[in-house]
Length: 129
Image (cartoon, rainbow, N blue to C red):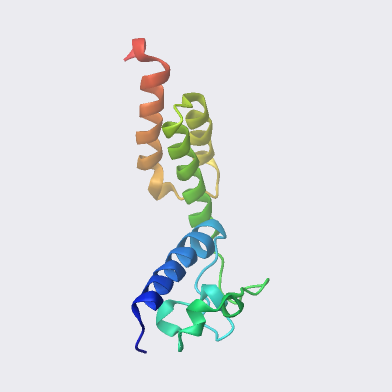
């Protein structure tokens, strides 16, 4: 499929929206069916309307693909910790760090939680370092 410069921008927007909205925030997996809408991998799109026409990007309420709840939950915990760090909300960062103990959290990301937690603790209790 040959695409124009403007369509390349649309394609990039599609991929970003898909990654953030479908995979990370909604926690859905890829949808390989023709009716997968925005959850369909870009490589499976057959025409430019698939990534430029909003009607073609509709997502079924009940996905055929599996849900990636663990990845979505983990992403949101780390994102909220990053927002807390940016706002210097040290207690908020530590509160989010507690969510890493939840069964839904992907323990492979524990080192990222610990690093953010250390930054918050250093700033919250500077004289204890």
